[in-house]
Image (cartoon, rainbow, N blue to C red; front, side, top):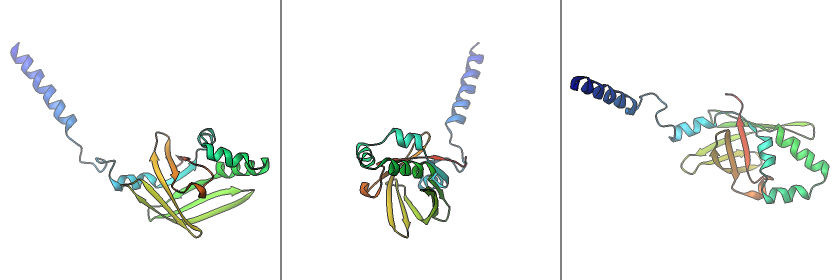
Length: 159
């Protein structure tokens, strides 16, 4: 009887060691800077229902000062916005503005220590504090006057 109990102890001990011992695959440290940058790669779309449902006061005020036609154009533009982040640091943003297809191309960099995304394009630079969520990611513009929305929600399309 003691021998049986002793055997169970070793089986449990080996199982604990196997479970506790880290794997040597490439995904061991998901929080590393390289992995965070990798999470950005791909195709992202603005989560329009989330964006519209979680408007901050400043965004609500800006929208309330617009005509119904202007508000509708803003909603349609936001709903059509798609981002493609490429491995080489380039990005493509597309959207439809009042029936016209628009493309913006530029370069992106990501500072994983501060979770800051910088997007450089022909008209300037936009910086966002980035937070990954269960559904995708959330961007908080560092300069609020440059953006209509205080927070931008995005979902990944290419998974």
